[in-house]
Each structure stands twice: as structure tokens, then as C-alpha cells.
Amino acid sequence: MLKIAITGPDGLIGSRIIELLKNAFHILSISHNDLDITDKNQVSDKINALDFDFLLHLAGYTSVDGAEKEKNLAYKINVEGTKHIFEAVENRNKKMIYISTDFVFDGKNPPFFEDSVPNPLGYYGLTKYEGEKIVKDKAMIVRISYPYGNPTSQKPDFVTRLKQLLEKGQELKMMQDASITPTLIDDIAKALKYLIANYKPEVYHIVGSQSLSPFEAGMLIAKKFNMNEDLIKPISFAKYETGKAPRPQFSEIKSKKNDFQEMRGFVVKT
Image (cartoon, rainbow, N blue to C red; front, side, top):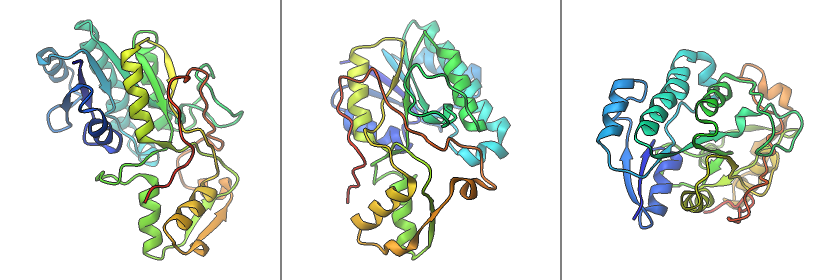
């Protein structure tokens, strides 16, 4: 059985992936409490002490708006941390999968494929792209988009978060002239299982099959949970973005390479 080390095992994606793949692989969790990835010596010691075949690097600074205010911290975690992890893994002659994001694109000429040229608008996307550059052609890069579908996660996905706000009767202003590509984490896990078995140091987009506006997504969530749809109000991208981090307007992400895992459209589960 292959041994997979995972950074960020307690996060939204990591905890669900472990739950789904724990019988397929021997999972070695590397939590934030066990390792500060911004400390090069600590990373080297930890990686050298582990017996593993692959390292799945999920840990990261993920707050899009927060990254604009905490640039130093975002850079330390997403760029320096990735460099430390990659160098330690490379020194062991092991394989690594780096999880990246659709935020490396500017959202201006969709759709975006694996060979589209990144041009991040915000600092979060910039740090993830810098991480990509560190591992390019030497590790696998898997870009994902708006992951959801982990109801037990301590950090709510966007579906759970919207449901919680609607339950409180809060009005939600959601963009009508923008697009996102929600991706079910279960499908990401299944795709990763295949990619581990068929490893190549290339870029893959593992994303949902349907792009829709945040407003449409919000309405679908409200209908699914029998919430008050009138609480969801359309807003323009320009108005929504005011005072927030720059982000791609049309985040329509597609794959030319994924012929191995069927990716579902936006499936809201109860």
C-alpha cells in the first residue's frame, strides 16, 4: 500500500480526502500543530523522519481578502512554506502533488485550461502562482476551484456558509455578472487517487463540470434547503468587489486532460 503524507489534513479538503482515501492508501497526516512549514529546518527534520511515497501539499494560507492585509504571512506560508516542503521532498527523491487554485487566472478571457497563462489579480493568487513556479515540471500541480461538500469540516465551505447565513435570515448580495466553477471534494479525491497511480509532473485542472454565477448558486442552495429565496439579491461584480481583494470575474475553469474522472456539476447535498 502506498504511503501518502498530507499537509493540511485538518482543513476543508484534507479532512474529506483522508476520509475517502484512507482505505486506498496509508495516510500520514502532517498537521499545523506538528509542523510549521515556514521553518525550513523543522520541515527538513520532519520530512526526513517520515516513511512515505508521495506528499500531497494541501496546507496554505487561503483567505483571499486576508492575504491583501497579511501579505507577509501569506507569502511565508504559500511561497516559502511550499519551497521548504518541495526541497525536502525532492531531497528524499519522493513525489509531490501541489494543490493550487483558479485564482492564478485573471478571469478576463474564459475558459481557462491547463495551458492557459496565469495572471493573478490578487495577492492570494500571486502567492499560489509563485508556489507553482517553484515546483513546475518537477512536481504535479493540481488546480481546483471553489471546493465544497465536506459537512463535517470545522471550516465551512461556501455552501454551508450560505446555508448558515440564510438560516439566520441574513440578506445576501451575490454577483450576477460573474462565474465560479464549484467542485465537489468527493470528485477531487477520486481524481487524486487516479493521479497518484498515474503520476506525471504536469498541471491538471480537477474542477466541476458546470460554471454558474454566484447568484445562481445561491438560489440553488436556497431552493435545496427550502430557504427564503428573496434573501438573495443580485449585485454587480464591480459593486461586490468594492473594498475587497481583486479577484477573477469569470472563473470558468476547464480541463483538457481529465479523461479519467467524471466531474459533477453543482450538486447541493442535504
